[in-house]
Amino acid sequence: MTQRRRRAPERVTLSDVARAAGCSLMSASRALSQPALVSDSLRERVEKAAKELGYVPHPAARSLASARSNLVAVVIPSLSNAVFVDMIEAAQHVLMPAGFELMIGVSHYRPDEDERLLRAYLAHQPAGLLVTGFERSEAAQELLASYSRPVVTLMELSQSPEDCCVGFSQLDAGAAMTRTLIERGYRHIAFAAAQLDPRTLQRAEGYRQAMRAIGRHDPTLELLTPELSSIALGAELLDRLIARQPQVDAIFFNNDDLALGALFRARQLGIDVPGRLAVAGFNDLPAAAWMHPSLTTVRTTRAQIGELAAKMLLDLMRGKQPTARQIDVGFEVIVRESA
Image (cartoon, rainbow, N blue to C red; front, side):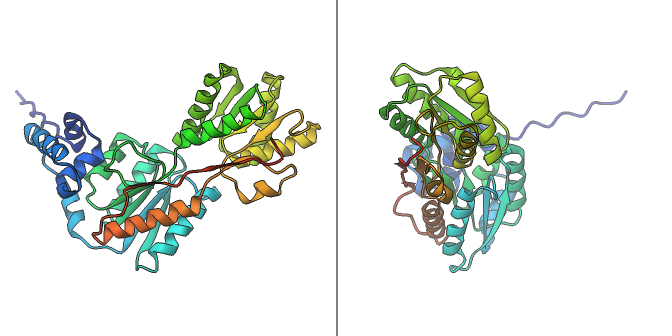
């Protein structure tokens, strides 16, 4: 009779340790690999959890810590979006003169591609990582947590004081634009969005909070689609919203491309902007100020985010502690002719 092979016990992961210690993956990683950077209470919790669970670090992570590299890996969602191009160009201006080369990967807003890129780039043992946002697959989080070199996150802020990031509150920015439209007298305000990445969904929640605050939130005034964002899609979304909700008097688009498409379509249809319909966007791309009517939007400092994140990463790679681990660059609502 053939003997069944005994199934090997599953390896305890850093994710298990973080869960047991009640902290994030990144915090658990830092507590074990760079204990001087975390509080005593966090370090003790993580060490206790690791000991009780029998956690053994993966040998690949240790090899990463000992090798030297002049590479910085960068993972962004898109290279067709000027927001990320501006950001990476600014980061390159900081890192290249300091002797570092950038490996740039594009995830196309796909968690599986984000994970694949991280796995491939960590094999090159980069000196540091620049990544966009905090939301990713559990496997990708494990990869980042086991990586003992510096990681700086772009475009978003974190609740964890151990995380290094440069960005702004997407939720607050979405709420601020919505409140601006409310203050200008609009009441049937729609929110239209495409390519539903985490930052877009945070802006949508900001919109909802502002509308709920005045008792006028209506889910039928939201039009969210996973389609790729484009000027052409902005025109289509305008058509869909007007057909669905003829009373709509303002539309807040989650980016300027969509808003510009809506302005072109409104002109084709003879819709008076802003007399009949206000249009607002997000990011303040160069074309926004030159449209007719010029576009009301939220100004974001993409180049500043890239520059500050690169400087923070450079300090960390040189063994220096940054002045601040989290930098909120803020945002500005720019009111122009379209609203």
